[in-house]
Image 1 (cartoon, rainbow, N blue to C red):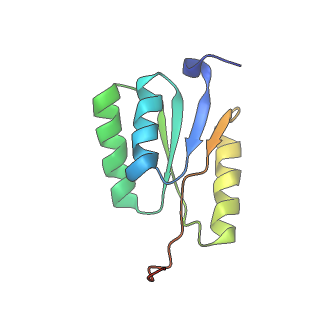
Image 2 (cartoon, one colour):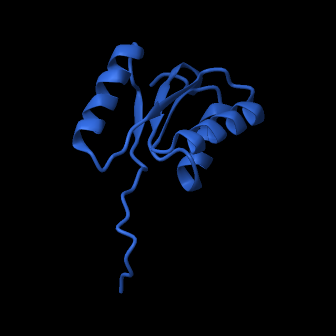
Amino acid sequence: MRPLDQQTILVTGATDGLGRALAQDLAARGATVLLHGRSPDRLARATQEIRQATRNDRLRVYRADFASLEAVRGLAREIERDQPRLDVLVNNAGIGGGGRHG
């Protein structure tokens, strides 16, 4: 396995919560981190904050709404075009219905 600073890692749902914390930790350890999110504003804010906290300039931003299969396919094509390889996928994005459970 390659050292972390030689890996490219996609973190879906990276704009807040666990995904954001993990993306920041990976960036602090030197990985190339591909940040995914649905909201352009939240993606921009998370990217700026992670970059400031880690000084990692190897952050890349990808926007897609995972409620749309075509958007997921488009994201895959975009990453395949932009990145020489993808070492790790952290599939953290969730789609919530907003209703009560239980």
